Image (tube, rainbow, N blue to C red):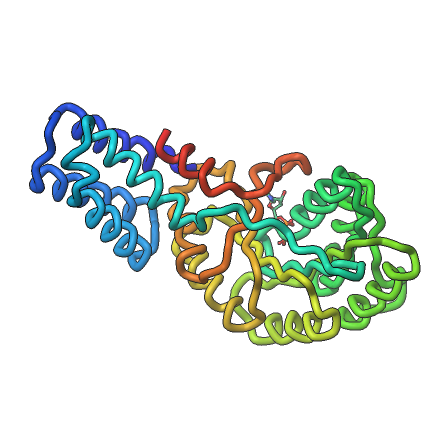
Length: 298
Ligand code: GDP
């Protein structure tokens, strides 16, 4: 992901470096090229505008004109502004004062929620926590079983409706899971909710009902970084519908243009907290805006 964007930006910087002193015309040309590169990488227009405006304001100021190496100074500004668009600081998970900490996962079907639940559980377990996974996705016939498989791989218990108990009520399952966690001394509850292929009023209402029943400490919106511009609309719909505290980007190992991933923080105002980059449970980490910016700028 981001390969084309990285190549384009690196071409802009190479051309700047060949110039020595930079005129305003040189800077304007570079800003136009950066703008086109971002738009072609699927970065949302308001984000491109905000980004290029800040870079331009700073690049025309004295920090570039007085620099010994003006091109290097522009690269530094682009790097800093990119980190800013990606959220600046890493936002850590907030744990409840009184356990269990409740984490609710929301997102479209196929976004990677169930896989993410397993990744998060393994990551938490490695840090000494005792999480459980909760199967509150009772929409898809094999969703419970899929979560059980993931839970087994992560080495954590899965709280699910009794087999043969019918479809079940996801709100009740979620509510009961908190009581179960308290009794069994699990300090974290990760609730997987049902997604649909697109934004859907029933899905949103169910997520809201589960949210109200479990009063999560963190609601994480899980989004597939491969889906392009649509990710931004989906994020906005979830923000308005259920609300969320943080974003998890999945499938960062894919070969999409990646601009949506760069837009979601700025558009929703909520931090990207985790990044998922593969099908294995270990392909998961806390999101670091500075590392992502370095990766893009090469
Ligand atoms: P859910 O419907 O949101 O629960 O999504 P799933 O967890 O079932 O994931 C949908 C598909 O995406 C599955 O085939 C996963 O193996 C795959 N997947 C999930 N996360 C990643 C990731 O980070 N990278 C890649 N390449 N595939 C992923």
